[in-house]
Length: 153
Image (cartoon, rainbow, N blue to C red; front, top):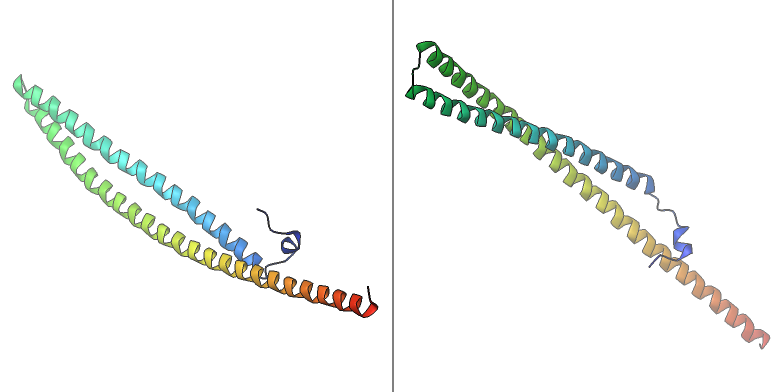
């Protein structure tokens, strides 16, 4: 159900602020989506490194059953050491991105609260405006009725 036309003509005094709040909230949501995407990418990269490490470990185990020279063994050891260091670095990156995500989510919650507060103010203004119009309309109808009564109509 749409509000009556006379209510649509009413201007909320903080309409600009409300629009700015909505725009800020939308901007924060876009930023959070970017952070979430980056977080997902970093998590996938960590999983990829873990999968590669498992594959190489399987290859090393198969190679140990056969002829394994020292160079290959050292090469695998260096690889695992590098993967271990990279996993630690990647876990740190993920932790930092998760922290940014939490901060952005808190900013969005705050922006949503501010916007909702402005919407509540707007609703109250609309109610007050509607009541004022209703009183004005009743006063006009009373005047019309009293004028008719005086004229004997």
